Image (cartoon, rainbow, N blue to C red; front, top):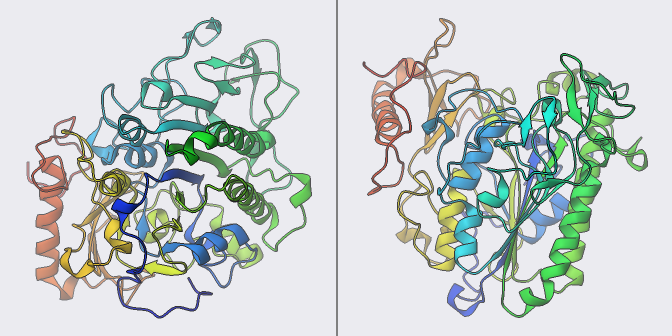
Length: 505
């Protein structure tokens, strides 16, 4: 981070004086996942930010910043699949775009998730927030029986507890769900309403209609978009407090907290209005950061902070309104990187990633090698010294060496595969990033040296034929073999698909 004073060693800053992992009890884990937050939306990563994020800055100051961290895709559903399973979502039937609220869950029954792996190893597991991986609701649109349970949802994927909403708010079925049931059933109907405080935005707020009409979304009478962050954080705090005594006795917990901000609708609470210099978006990020602070304060009060891993990251780069924020406020949500959400360029998938673990990770340290959110499963397995189950985490590579004392004995991570919402691929290895051609004629093959050109302004493909050849071979092997990890026997869920225009048929 720009504001930290560090003695920098390329690749890492380690903490050899910290206790060995085997002397520690199993750590608690809190994973906070924001929605459409760009790399430049954390003030500690962006010295030109038009608002401050003091609690993200605190995580950076008290933990480790990963400056080359990537989500596994550039939109909601596939990124969440990669995060939770350690497998790239393009290996499934979802090759482009996102899910709506209602459809079979993308995580198939029996697949290992972060939650199921940790629960098997003695953790209590909870999810509070936005799911967006598909759910099976009772009945059909306009003919529901909300007395029946929801199926194929977080409680079927390793979580002991669920409180949240099914998907992004523009997809409907909007209600506060606890477990398998809506606390107040979504028996009303609405369309998106104007948002007068944000750029190119909408609202989901009463009054709602009692009768169904074409194009309307299901909504509960008590649902209000601006309440999401408060309700999610309140419920997360309540759940952690309920398991705190057991956690202090050595029975750890895992909380997954996927927030709905700063994704549209951008609706900061009144108490944050007028703060920062980036309009409603900046105010919404300030509110998001404030709720993170509430969570960190709880861990302090409960004497849980020392051996709790807190990870804070985002599902993809910033929404397309990033362009308007540059023009109107001079705020760069993607920081120095090119483009934003949905894009194959760095702004689409390079995201903020902070990890604090006072018992093991040195304050103010940095890791500058590439990592991917698919890597969390292998990292947690390494921390617990447990094997990854067979046919699981095919693309998960542990980054726990980032804070270990013997980094020189570990090889660099295998290449990271990037994937855009339009189906386009890229491969990243070391300083090189090879972007593959797409189905459109304008989508040509490109090569960038990210050490010299992090903004991807100078395509050097013509000058590095051997690099192109090597990366193409690696990319083709990873995509077609079904796995990134060596020695894993797996396969994709489908035959080769149309977006792989660079593969011979």
